[in-house]
Amino acid sequence: MSKKNILLFIFLILPSFLLADSEIYDIYIGDREPIISPISQYDPEISSYPNPFNDDQIILTIDKSNYFDFVENILTPGQIEMFETYPETFKMHVYPSRRSCAVPPEVLELTKENAKLTDEGEGLEGIVGSIPFPKPSEALHHVWNHILRYRGVNIYGASPFYVVNPDSSITFGTGEVIAINYWNPFVENDKGLQGMLMSKVTHPPRLADASLLVIESLNALKTPRRAWVYNPGTRRVRRAPDIAYDYKPSANQGLTTTDQFDGFNGAKDRYNWSFLGTAKKLMPYNAYEFYETNIEETLTPYHVNQEFLRYELVNVNIVQADLKSDKRHTIPHRTMYFDLDSHNMLIEETYDDENQIMAYREFPIINFYDQPMCLSIHSATYDFATKRYQLTNVRSKDIPKIQWRLSEPHDEKMFTPEGLKRFAR
Image 1 (cartoon, rainbow, N blue to C red):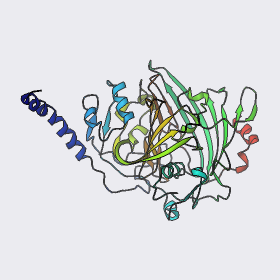
Image 2: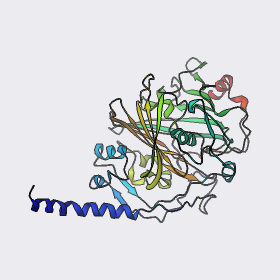
Image 3: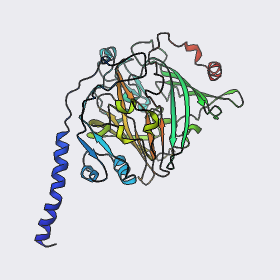
Image 4: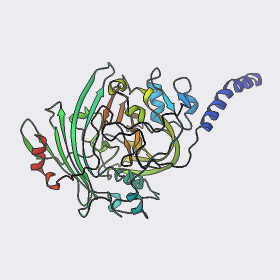
């Protein structure tokens, strides 16, 4: 290439790089400003969480015209794949970064020092109800912080799920859940348990594994998960030791595995875990507008309606899980992005044996400031092979509000095989 052509090339591409750098520079991550109590517009009688940042303006929209300018810095491989797979529809509206996440003060009071990992990371010993690893330094510290983040106490709620096909057809289902979390400051926990959960599918009514009971311990090696299912066809409860790892419930239509529920859950022994460091990435954050939008408007072909999602530059801890050579799992490689502030998993990317990306997953969060706590408003899984996506654990103004701390605690005796049969009916 001649010197003249080289100079012409530099002048042609330089403005775009300068523009990208300028826009990134304008996105500033400030100090934490946790919302620790309900805002004035909040009405506890309705299922609504008004946006505390309603006046924020979009700083930048990333779409097919400019996404390549951000490939090397603030985008993740999964986001790049979304731009390349859906160039006509996928976009990301970037807003000011608002570090709004909070936990109850009782959790912070208990958080003094790191817990201790036991049994090769399958268990831990620490102050119950605390943030287990306030100074994380290993991959599994971040995984445990996510699993044991504050998520309420005695819980009751309903949550729909959707599978959206490329032709716009939608499979819809809904269910009901009751649960007790034991890792929190508000209940006694001398049982060595994370929690107990019962769920049932209420629509469609005759799924093979329509109702489920799970009892999860704090040590998957010493006390593996116990699970039972109720089959409405046979009206029988049976033990279900296979509901773990890469088991795929029929409602998931093959799109997600059991250990992908709530980002990640369960035993960790099938993977080698690596901490890849902390980085600034664009994450689905403070998704109040999406929560407050009618569900019908949010479900569009290929991916949710990106007009209603908010992305912010967030400090994330990046963890990689690679399948051990002597283990099996349908997901050989996983990359997880955990929020530095709230410890929520915000994104997961899954890869096949040849490290080709299979799926991109998002967990947009809001601060449920009446608690206070930050949790996702849904789990979105985008499958690149089929171009279908799955939305689960949907929380929205269209759905009755989940009760995170019931005034009347659940009777622990309900969480038995006999109790499951009664609950399922």
